[in-house]
Amino acid sequence: MKRKALDKLIKLLDLEQLEDNLFRGQSENIGGPRVFGGQVLGQALTAAAKTVDKKRSVHSLHAYFLRPGDMKQPIIYDVDRIRDGGSFTTRRVIAIQKGEPIFNMSSSFHKKETGPTHQIDMPDIPGPEKCMSDLEMRKQMIDKVPERFREFFTRERPIEIRNLPGEGMFEEPKKQPPYKHVWMKAVAKLPDDDICHKGYSGLCI
Image (cartoon, rainbow, N blue to C red):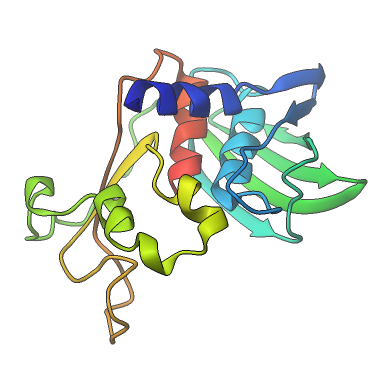
């Protein structure tokens, strides 16, 4: 089941190329009329990556959700090749449905080279084996979910998410720091394809 869920996501990220800078993506039924925002972000990042040298990896992106997406309609991704520099590549992507933009994203790709690095210390938090999975939490809360969403709500996910105790989405509301610790991984091995990895990481955001 986990492999099947991941394969379904990979297929969702496999965009149809219409022209050099134009791609078309389909949507997953999540039980309602709208499109999951993470899907649009992942597909947009995939579209951008398909126009960039494979030796360059995305290191920065900014995205805006402008209108709700229609799950029944395909999404067109229009990639603007802003700049191809010596070290950096910049792309803008507009997601379009029914002739109107529903999302736009700016992203920067960087070739592998030595440069400044920035990293915070690993926080002292419980390991993933001590945290309940998001799916386990969903199954415990199923009675609080509208019936039309229940099948999607409890199905196997391509991403395993484990929230720290007390930080899950179903916890009682309380004052929290302006950040969240989450363990996250693919439920099975991803293809050895950097573009797929980029799209997957976008969907996880």
